[in-house]
Image: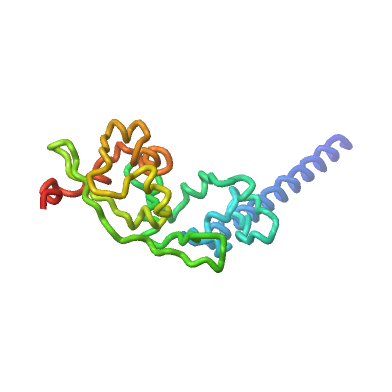
Length: 209
């Protein structure tokens, strides 16, 4: 009889533990769901509800304030944050890579040009250049200075990589694939060279006018 009583107490104790554990788990799930719901699709370092500042549990992990201790998200990411990049709000190209040009044009991010708050920022150069393709069966290249000068200063490319004069850059796809000219960035930190139609967008007759 005593053994039966002890067994009953053990069963009741286990039931209480299981019930308490379920309650805690459900509360944790509700908190995660609430935090995820509050996240905005905008990647804004000034917005503490931005998805890039949520940790792997969906909790707010930082505010982007450089005067405060580094957040857990910063420590985990350190410049490459696959979870944040895979989250909503970042358009992808056909390869599933983040389309940074579209991200900028859609206003999803607004990176600062300098850490100096008093520095005057130079606006992007809105000028397209038509580069004739050597092949007969492929469109010419329409090079947009705007998106490139949005990210980079002129001296990053000129004159070391590209001579700023018409006909002075004897470019070839072989050289580009080997890391020259456009290949300095594309295929490394910019979209891959296999996405031909991303650059070859201008019909052949345009370069002859």
